[in-house]
Image (cartoon, rainbow, N blue to C red):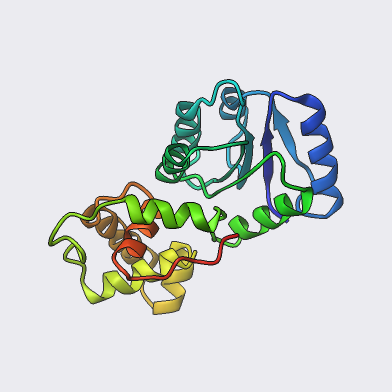
Length: 211
């Protein structure tokens, strides 16, 4: 089971979602809040955060604040009618996936399981459009990465944690963490999702199965 926290202004929505997710054994005790600021104030180490964005006012800065406060948390956003630029903002901020409020509950369960396993959950066509529309600076396709850094980049894009990579390629945790920091700096990426976009754009990895 994973530690899940819900954020939505709709109390009935939060209560129903809590009962369902606990009922299918995704989590044994789900906390929920009306606002992101409440969550930041009261929680310490949420693993997965499900946020319903207000359809009238989509506060992306609150999402950024959330991810700055919980850098290891995996955030799933529920929102209707997102535009391409809004998808791009969410990906760049580090949000792991999105679903529509029009999707059924099974789609939400699938999304939670995917991001819990280290994958992302975005519409395939949206990822394609973002990759096509994102220019790559001439001469920076490989960003001066060493063979070891490319190896670690591919493992990061495959959803592995620093600890898992350490065990896979027999390096110390601190060495993997150091390589990860160097890779992000060389590729001028803020987070792993940005790195994944970079890797796709430069034909280092295929687009992962999304939906």
